[in-house]
Length: 516
Image (cartoon, rainbow, N blue to C red; front, top):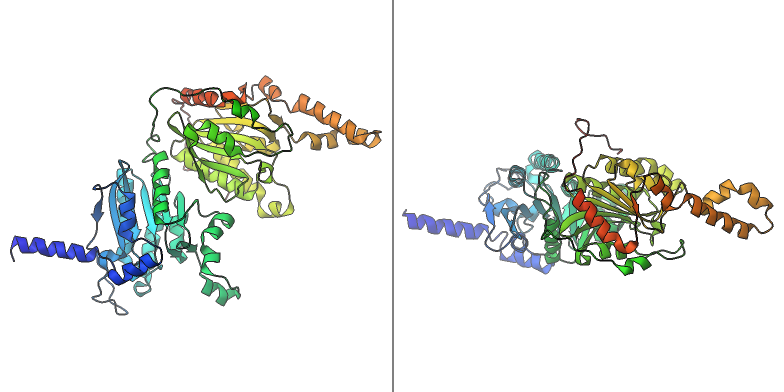
């Protein structure tokens, strides 16, 4: 056989393998509203930058009719390439080939890509679209999942890991996305659960559809497993690319700096009118966030889960910052179990990847109630205390309005290592709200008063002036400055600049023991 014949044979083999499960199955995939594995990677990588790995991988299974059966590319496409000019490693499961099921070689391909991601210090993106473990391969398939999980943990905190759930992701397969930093889920086509509807019905008698059980609404609103919801595959890839644009390649680098060296800030009079005169009235903290970040561009994470807090990524003068904020228009901005988990995870992610943290505080306290106490609010709330205390990145805290009790400390108080703490003049910092405090302190006086409501209101105003004023904290050096709201961007910008060279030494240890 001539060299030219060999080259031609190589081309034909490549072309056949790149066709995946064939035209009929590809047509079925598209009819279901899904792109193919290669189309998804084509949307992710910059043109002409991707390189494929392990195209010729073949399974070794000889049972249940698998002997000699060809599964093109082993049902998963692995590539490295540039995403907006920066290297990324990725694996995309091919549902047109044996339902994208995970066998020994399928898993090996993914593991080797993860190893390369770790070795090269570049993000890893895993696009999930699989029927689960390949039953014919038995324990080899389970072993494959275990090896993937192990690498998820090895990569954790070293390189960013992003999972896109673009199809079914059930059983053990669901744990790999759960071990990554962010999950993007596609509406209607994405499904994420441990046991499917049929198993649940057999075991418990409960009847539920796969969408109700593991669709985006369930996994975003109820479980909080999902971080972003996409309308289709293209939207999911767009979210992934935007997310990557905020992140460093690995934990030894700083996030991309888009600044030109100058600081852009001007007095913003609109911020002077954000806080209502009545302390009981809510407002949307995202109005504050968008006035602070560059061009109002804020990528909110877990928007529909634990909406009483807002977390996400933005830029200030071109530098990536993580933003944590109480949301007064949902539950008054109280901290509950879910909000505690949401905040703690985002704080720890930012700390792992050298992203400064800006915290906006308007918190009346931890949510009271029997269900919260029985559910472990103490344990979950302690996660926030631990996460902020353990974080060594620059931490800037701004108290907008209420900052009561232990929740004041939990939202990155100076006592937890915040580098800068400022307050607006509307800030109320106290052990508890003025009305609650007056009910306790002046209980006997109010019982005897001729006009209890009028007397109580007078005591409330006195308490606010005496104990809840931001100037009390400023007088104790627990607050660095009381600033005009319109000067907020200026204050944060200068603080970030001064903290560029921050260094902090902690006791040497394997790792801290966060309350779990």
